[in-house]
Image 1: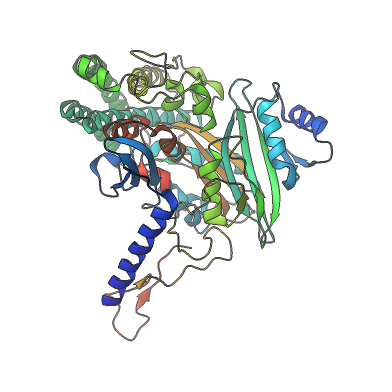
Image 2: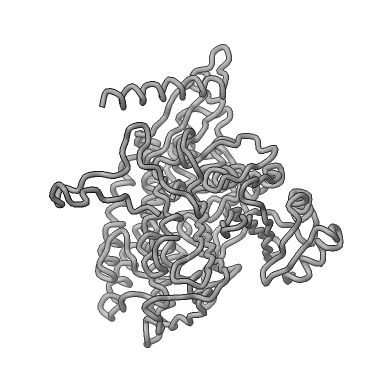
Length: 171
Length: 393
């Protein structure tokens, strides 16, 4: 099934929640995302059995959450996007629809600071629990030290007095 | 120094306190740490086992020890400069990781790859798939106590590494598949060498089958251990051999063909409970061996029909794709590797997302671990073929 007819199917059920379209999918209303996902999975013509990738993009003034859905039986795919404000990024978890969302949402929470409502176990996954900030946001600045461990080190090849430290080149 | 030590001890105590609050061990339960330094965890990762004697109630995976922030690095380097980093995502199947990123950028910048380069990509990734499956199965057999096959399999993998070295100068992190094509051509001599090696290798697979695959002790050890149903596999987004072992007939190479895979004749093996339940550890093991045989078939066809021509498209030194986004899905040795690249029109990506097969495979372990023996956890991790750097990126 092509993308447009998939979107029309969703539009039939949620006429007011489907917003702007793009080539591979559509923007949807953030508050109804979970219901739409549930519909995409359970509807026989769509039968999106898999949430293959769930991630976010920081566009500077807002965050964009991207859900890539795939159907193995129908051999089609669809992208759902949601826009969230940067300072108060909260959205319903889709963990009850696809189990894989558990870890993928944890990663998104860890690296982007998006809060998922009703997530069973929303903890940091990649970084330590006491880490400050969310690294994949565009305005993130890496800390200079962590528990007394410095992130910069002396370069023995540069003599004293000159700029004697090399920054860790991450970001 | 003293201060740092005190801080770390304090942190450990706090962690322990939090753990106890998080898991609340009851009556006979015991918390055991497995890893981060453990030979069977395939890299640095930690499991917190909630056990009652030998039986596990829960195994909670703690990942992130190898988190290098590759996605963040992607936003700081130019498109061409990111290709070597993709090698480090999955060091056992670096070719597919190269290819996924290259394909995504080619889609973004509408670059047409020459046909000979596509054939070379197929040859390189299939060779790499064989090498990766050899390590996966060998390490799994070693984890559960069969050391001999591991040695034999690593010996065969050394030959693949030699071929790779001749092809692109590197044995592990290749940086071979570039945006727009491949870095080096494959001469006639090398092509003949690869065919010669396959002639030697295919009978070796039969020998491996006699040595370990059909070994009754080995079969008894793995059959019926932690079967994964097709619904679970799809819900947890398992990919590649893990998904197919559960009976889901899906392979990107056939179902959403990319590169030149549609020109080759090969089968997609699917798990059907070879010696036990569908989707058990033994099925996942056997699937990889069947895939090795199919890869040999693809290699023979690709080497026989490879056309002459260019190996690199005309790509500007600094690639500046137009504003937009692209996805690329490739069948890596560990299953569907998913790249999502967003461009803002500048010379650096706005966002690079890598969804790796090991990440989702790792997330199912907590679910699978309920009620199994500690020794079986090792078999589960081995059979899911989890590579830690790919989980953490």
